[in-house]
Length: 128
Image (tube, rainbow, N blue to C red):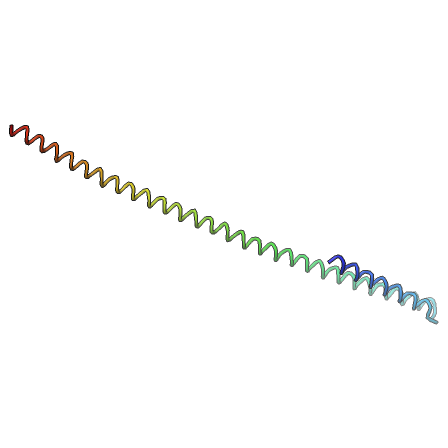
């Protein structure tokens, strides 16, 4: 980008110098020559301002696009991480509930066996 800017600046300066020399060597009145040089320099300045504004606008647009792309990429990463966290939490919660249910089931089974054994002992003691 800098090389292109240097080339454009060199061309504008060269064109201005050539035009100024041409106007100075032309067989016209001094006032006419000065007016022509002033007009030409004003045109060059306006052209340079326009190119500078255009380049500034292009850079702003490039920066905005880069920002939007980065925001989109990292926004998706954050959303994916949050979704992964939610899924992991639900999986862990389901696992804990399954273990709890299995433990309750086994506890109830052991309790029933203990009661049945106690009842059997009680019956055998009363029958003896």
